[in-house]
Length: 419
Image 1: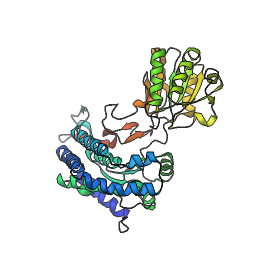
Image 2 (image 1 turned 120 degrees about the vertical axis):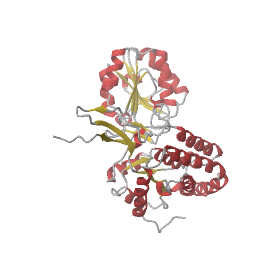
Image 3 (image 1 turned 90 degrees about the vertical axis):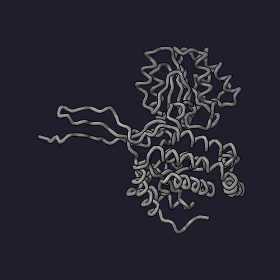
Image 4 (image 1 turned 30 degrees about the vertical axis):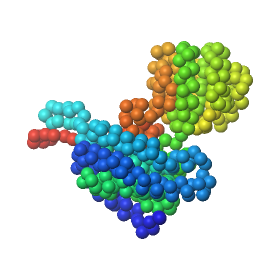
């Protein structure tokens, strides 16, 4: 049941106090808490699934689509995966307190930077209850306090997971207010949360375009976010045809619903006549609808005409826009006009073209000879991620533990004074 007695101001104040205590938490304490949470998921599995059943029933009563209901389900596999993730994060090096290389000034003063937590992080997300565990674990490991506001469709599951999390914090001697789940589905709570500049340092939204657009427009607290993943693969005239085919197919069909899926395929005019019909036939076999510009359509009889809107659309579906271009410059111009600064890739054996593409394309991730679906923290060696950022300040690209921290200057002397 929703708790009508709570106050977002109170949650914020408690989080700020917990954030101060978290600065003193050792790596061992944080790992102990994470492992206790993993044990709690296993020990209280039946209870968690009983709470989850309330959400599943309400979702069925509201006739939510089957894929949405599936994302809500705390199956044995989902709980095992969450427990494994907690153990993996527990085993990762603690970033807090690490020092950059120290420089020594002419007066003997030592200057370095120390990695520290951001403070209080608000997470606003939809549907998936596993985000409750993922977000809590990453914020905890990086020394932050967090306030979690999940979707109303997962309300019972999120509150239950919040209990497991707080039991783990208690077992490690850490403040239970270091992770708080907002105890209401009232949308007004979100509106208040995004104005709590005295208590929340940054908000990370995890959800659909409408949620992120709303928060981008209304939040007074800084956001780490991306609005869309309109990703491109450009097949250059110097591409290896077989390599290009494998990359393009994987970029689109690995998982069509992820933000790193290719949404537009750009193909150089010199390679298009030989390569594009083969690629188009393979996409058609895999059930991908092709929306092509006139030059691409002449090589893809199964395609439909692309509209101006298609170039700017993140389909998140088995739909692909295809365009033939005259040059690397035209491909980069297209990306600059329609891209969302998420992830872009060039397929080429021309080193100069690859270097130009990586240097000049303005996106959070730019690849050479790789599919865009590598846009994932684990694939970058960051471990679990809390999201992908297209921000220009602080974090850009997959946001792992380091992205949830900042650096402060630390200077050490021996009585030097400024003359």
